[in-house]
Length: 267
Image 1 (tube, rainbow, N blue to C red):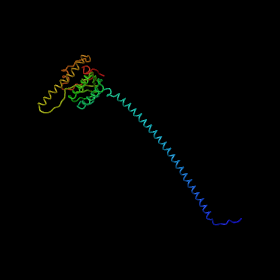
Image 2: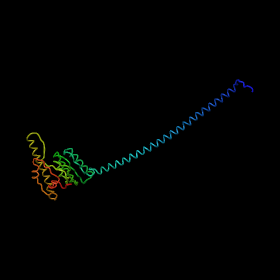
Image 3: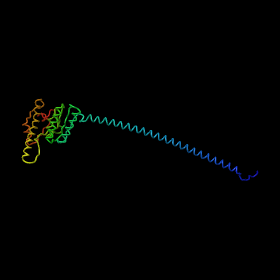
Image 4: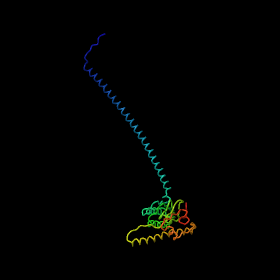
């Protein structure tokens, strides 16, 4: 076999080889770039699909949360409405549990006035659990309750726990007066404090005596009316009231208040 002899490539052959090599490299680069492009496209589609899916999931979860929140809001609204329907305010029951003062009297009057404006002629109950307090402020509320009655409201006053001092007087303002079985009413002479010149003190004392006479008459008149209506079994006159409370506190049980006509009913 003849030995192959090395020879120099002619220029045309070199150019051909270079061209073929370049073509191979170009084709390889195109294939590479095409592959990379396809991979990038697939990756983009995958991400888009995942994003869309995630967005859909988020939208669904968000929608569920909104629906749940709305349902909870409806439930809370119904509960609030239920609570309101069951509340004392809806049933026009005012719980007077404070000392009788300008602030507590003003708050009570404002509530009564609101009920009158929003529910003219509605039945109202004022439940007293009070140690008493300012006589003049209390008498202002007494007159206001009578005013509510003249406007057509049936006002029930009740004593729960205790209606002491001025609260016991306010108890008498109701169209119907109710006392709970274990409640107590305290009646005593009017207490007041004053200072100044002797003449000023004497004038104030005389005025308070007149106020006290009005208070005694409030009790006596209600006792008389109860006796006439047959709800009291024993009459209690103004003089007897003064004798009972002279320089002492006079505590009356629910049974005693019913007997003397200081209430119309014991629950």
